Image (cartoon, rainbow, N blue to C red; front, top):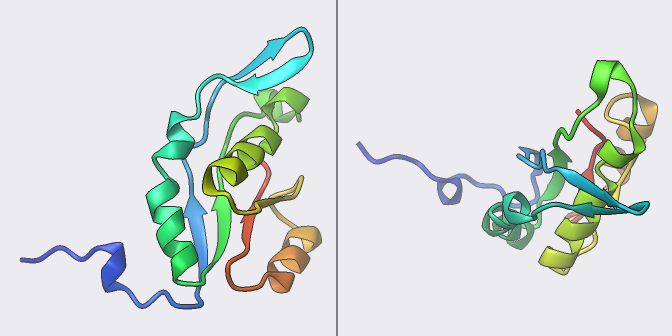
Length: 121
């Protein structure tokens, strides 16, 4: 039996919901926030590059943390989106929500090749 891979699917121009394992510690050094390690982002690059080559619209879901259901600024996914953009050399849009009208509107406005990272799903 031959296992199918991503390359076996017709993805040209599709909208892809991509669950990324970006639960990376954030270090706070004298008020400057920095990712502890970007290895989890780096290992997703080949898949994301392939999806971009296929002109997909990519919506990234990830989770960093929301202790007791509260938003903690240092646990937002802003640093993750910024680092992914740097590594891909491609803009990554980021919004501070994961559900609701803002998310719906942003997804509706996306064009092929756009990447949107949602906040702490």
